[in-house]
Image (cartoon, rainbow, N blue to C red):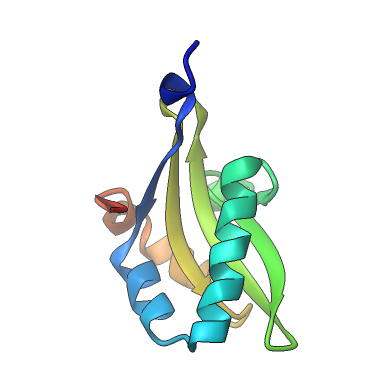
Amino acid sequence: MSEEQNEINVYESRRFEKAIKKLTEAQLKVVEDEIEKIIEDPEIGEQKKGDLAFLRVHKFQLDKQLALLGYSWIEDRLEIYLLQLGSHENFYKKMKGQRKVDMKSRRLG
């Protein structure tokens, strides 16, 4: 297979876009580095179960606080959907309520 055929497409939900707009340049750099880690190894995040079985969560430190980056990895289509970025507080509750909206995400440029 050629390298182009193995390229992973990355999409952002509107909620994810709003969250990253609130970050400082230094915080954005950290998040971009973590996204690169996900692209390199899409199974790096913990696979959730039950109602959140579509979700993987990658945890990392952002300004000395635990940050969660929720995403979906669709292996057969080589697609990653960046769904949510935030702290643990209400993270999973918000994810349950937003499932349908997230799959209408637009492609990253």
